[in-house]
Length: 332
Ligand SMILES: [Mg+2]
Image (tube, rainbow, N blue to C red; front, side, top):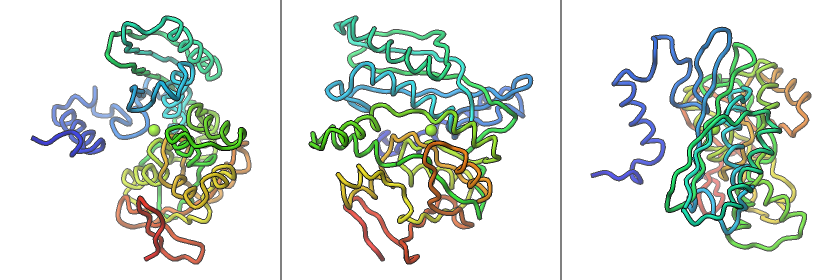
């Protein structure tokens, strides 16, 4: 019998989504929901506005190690990655439900630390913590559900990219993956580099204001970078049935990542996950308005093209195609 590992995460999601659709339990009414399985958050219409919902789990020894993360950092990240999915829809968070699983010998002070981290981000993002669940378990996990809403009738979605759209990204993708590598391989850098990389991996700041600003400027397509820039761009291209071309020379690699990882930095920017930056596409005039208004870095990195759904082409400065594999860069 086939194992989950063979099917893969996305294969499994497709299988389960089909079961739910075939059983006709994927909606309450023919026009509901507006967006179901397959985007950053689910979206449905209520009287007057759009409601958003998302859920994410952080599992010990899968998503984090208690050797390299504090309890405060753990819960900050667990809430931040959910808020990031709301940001990727251009929404506003409202309510959070928190389910904790803990070994019974966990010290209570760790859990109060955990909640201090959550309270800090809940305050900052104006999210109300309204419930949850606690269960005994052999390992620690934190599962958070966030409910939110849209500020207008418009939201950002994965399926709205069109050929001719410019592709842009906030911040410096690859920084979180560089931080993970530093922590797991115990790499030693100067204090300012260590601080930047650690923060990039452990303390992502959800781009909520930025997501709302994208909607305001008429951007329609976005995703947050959780799986890696190429992988998440592919999610957009598959949902939108388009291809994309990325100009790798334009990738915004942070100088501290470039300085400490050298040639490897660009690979981290393309494939490293967990940055929780926003990747979005739109007409160049709208993208330029967004770039002018947002305080965070916004970099134009490529273009959406008509072609096979989900195909991503990487080109160098001279326009030549580049192939990327696990060990490095290869022209063909
Ligand atoms: Mg997401």
